[in-house]
Image (cartoon, rainbow, N blue to C red; front, side, top):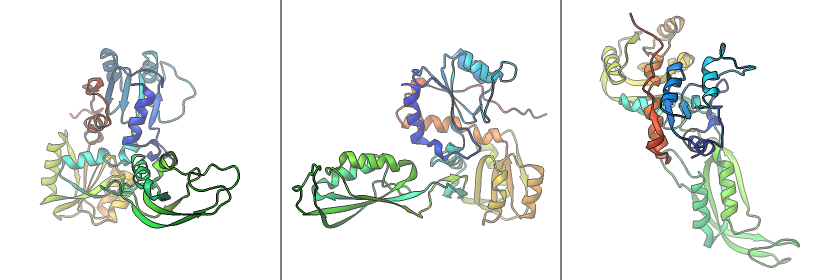
Length: 363
């Protein structure tokens, strides 16, 4: 497989357009025509990770955190040692950061399952738009066109796929000079029994669905409509959910520390309520604190809560469990490993990094 083809697999898992504006997910450094030898999966790109890639004959690192966040005007060994090492050793770099955080089945959902949190909804929904896709088809071509729409990504609502609604009716048209009609004669008005197929499609799949429809449809100029609907997407930043058995704050904290194999956790206790409804945002979650504070949540679990945000959490009456950034996001590796295999990537070329480590040391 080449890098260019591999990007298509990644796009199926977490489209790049889902990323936040500040982010730089996607290609960091790459030769799109290069054949992949081995892929190293890692949370970060560090000197240890790059050395591991070289020693294991890896030519692609897929990381969660991008190595490049801001535009560069120059690359030097002194100022950009990691990027310089990757370039000189011809190691391709691709990152899946906030697009993977937002995507359905992404990092937050993986961690939630480890902790027994049953997802109810995202904390902050994605801004991706949804559309109604309607096309008029001759009766005999319903199955062919419908399947083409579904194969291109239409008809997905929550955990249901291939959803649609069919309406029978009469279509009229008159082929003019210069046309090549599938049915009827030039200059003569025709009336044909047709089915209107209605389905839904996300913004990311609109164009591929339209092209698939045109390819499968028998008409030279098929009639179709695409219009925006106000359905909310089922994915977004973070999530909130429910655990089966209520716990005290300390019980849940110890449970979390054990399940995530974390070095430490820190509590910001604002009340003594039992823990049942839990909000989760892997990585840094300062930006969602005010939003979570407006929800009926027993506990907010995240990483990197600053001193002033901790004080604000107490003002909001919100219990917060802070787990180190690394210990919430190290699960990017097993999570993306499983998803890559599901898209057809061979286990033989996937390597889980053995050199990932927190930058902190507890004394």
